[in-house]
Amino acid sequence: MNTLKRALLRLIAILMLLLALVYATDYISVRFGIPGNRDSYGTVSVRAMYVIHEKNGKVEYQFATPQAETCVHSLFPHFGYSPCWYLNRHTETRIDI
Image (cartoon, rainbow, N blue to C red; front, side, top):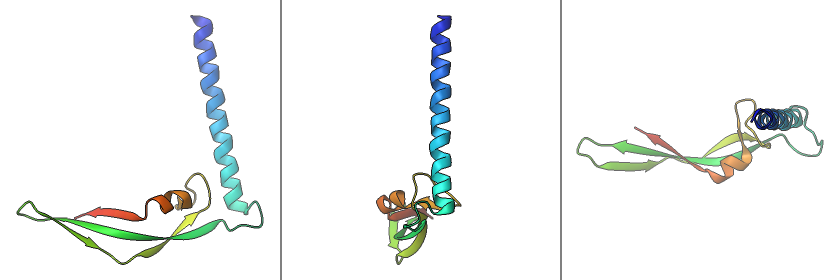
């Protein structure tokens, strides 16, 4: 039992180190523009959908004009921007009022 617990802890530690290495590599790629022939930032057109809850229990939907939102070409969010792969799949944002 003790060796199984030790092996499980070692596996968890290795996975955590691997995840930290992938995140650090992703950060360095965005920060320093590696590889040099691609942009670190992009834009995606995102449309807001306002969900208005009325007093009578009905719900009204209003759509705003699409806005260009800045994103990063990476696996993880960096510098306060979402990854472009995520924004391309979520082009509508829902705002409850």
